[in-house]
Length: 155
Image 1: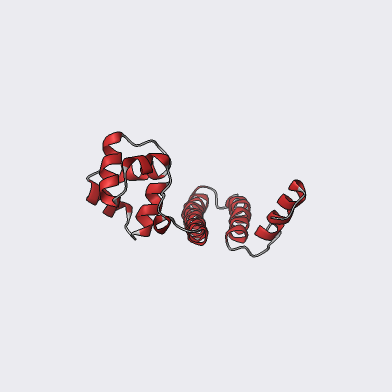
Image 2: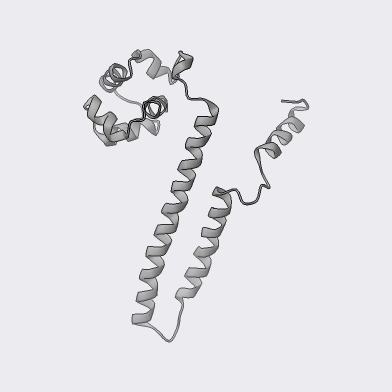
């Protein structure tokens, strides 16, 4: 995860980091997902980011200027959620279109594809409501109150 933070801090893509280190993009992706990198990979990454290997192995940067703050991390998570929603929506559109064409060709008298459209559509709507936070049933404030309640003290 530290590699991802450092990469984003420098506004580099995974491809750019792969080019700078000589590692493959797939290797960069694996490391960012939490797979343990080899010592050689760590050395290459430490050279590019100008940190020691021990820092990368610990998973945290000691220098405050190199740490992404909570707001930035939450923005990254939000953008990742939005990307996931749009990916879900595109898959829905492609699969439903294919099934609709298949249904019209093979059995136009029975439109079973409507059940797929309706069922998966409910999932899409639920995903959108969650990502875009239309309803705030379980907002961060609610979470904080529940934690305070369980701990019996103010945070």
